[in-house]
Length: 222
Image 1 (cartoon, rainbow, N blue to C red):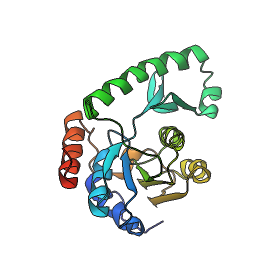
Image 2: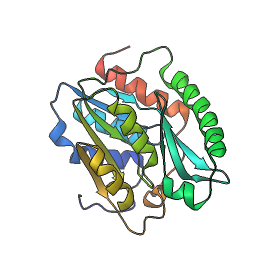
Image 3: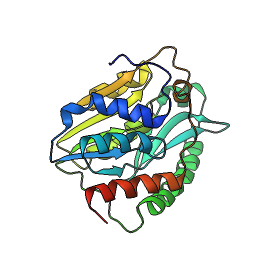
Image 4: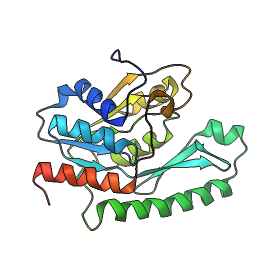
């Protein structure tokens, strides 16, 4: 891990620093940067621009614990992938019915975002690509693990995960599942992703659309 000054100013600065750590991927003609929306998009936009790579989305939704929505009991991703945090599910006595109810609600939001962000454009071609999955940080890692599982089913040639900041627990869970894992900082105790950003506003849908449009314009794609 690189030595970085925490907190990051914002997601844009974090993306620029992360891009520097990913320079080994520059020049690959099979490179594809996939952001986890919404917070991962401003980070990934900086990486994609620096590496001259296409930018798209891996749509994933955290399954928040009822009454504690920031605590992830799992996550779902495009293609019907579901990943659970068994420790949290067991410790809190969360029933299958509760998981199913939350997953159904988040599935509807997943569909809404797919239409809102991508419109009628098809998803990117992942098979045979060198994919870098990017988010603004990892607390439990459940959302990224769902993203990894969903990406693996589409047979990329290489699968990397890159984040500015993460908990050591999340990194330990992810490392065996990917070909490369890049993280700039893993402070302990972790507290939460937002703790490590001076400015951490919620990324809006219109920001996501604008960043994707900028990336398409840069690539000469309508």
